[in-house]
Structures are given as structure tokens and as C-alpha cells.
Length: 134
Image (tube, rainbow, N blue to C red):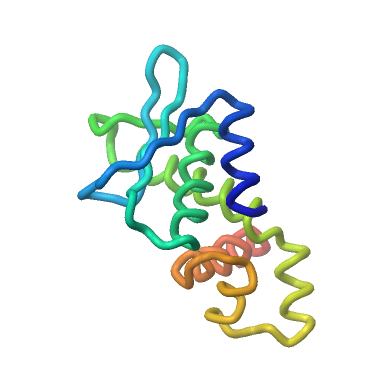
């Protein structure tokens, strides 16, 4: 899924996306009056923007928004749920398998191929490894 598809999805779902000079993170999601609002850091690179937007959409579309007052177990669970949503859309397992089968095995190379960050690609491998093991 490309970044433009993510913005289109946000628009179709009535989710506003704005840019701010965030200090603590690259993105955050707020829910107000039943509507979702995503704030993205205005100075992150293209691949980071794609990853963060997908992650924040994951919060919105998987019902995983929490408050800072929620305990850490809830926050960890909902962060993982948002990551899973993003991973399965940005790097579908069948596409990852095809890339590896074609000899594309390095994290950096795969991250470039899918237009994501290397940190995110590491999460992709962990996600699918855990999913297969479960």
C-alpha cells in the first residue's frame, strides 16, 4: 500500500490528518466526539511518514485508541494491534515471501523495496515469526 492510498483511506473514513512539529513522537491519534484525528510530525522522511500514518490508521481502524491514563499493559496491547494493522497492509506476507524468494533478504533492501523504515521491517519479521509460531 502506498502513502497516497493511506491518505485516501483516511479521507474515506473521515479521519483528519494534520502536520505539526511534534516533540515526543512522530505521530499520534486523538478521538473527539466519535471522530479520529491524526497528527504527524512535519519533518519526518517519506518512509517514516508512510509507516507512522499506517500505524496511526491502525489505531483508528482497529479500535485501538487509549488515553495516557490507561495502564501500560493496555497501551502495549493497543500499540501492538496498531503495528499489526500497519504491517499487514504495508508488507503483506505473500509479498514478503515473494521478495525473499527472489533473493531480496537484507533488512535494508526489503525496507527500500516496500518503502518503509528498517526499524519497521524488523517489526515485520518479528510479527510474522510470532504469527507462525502461535
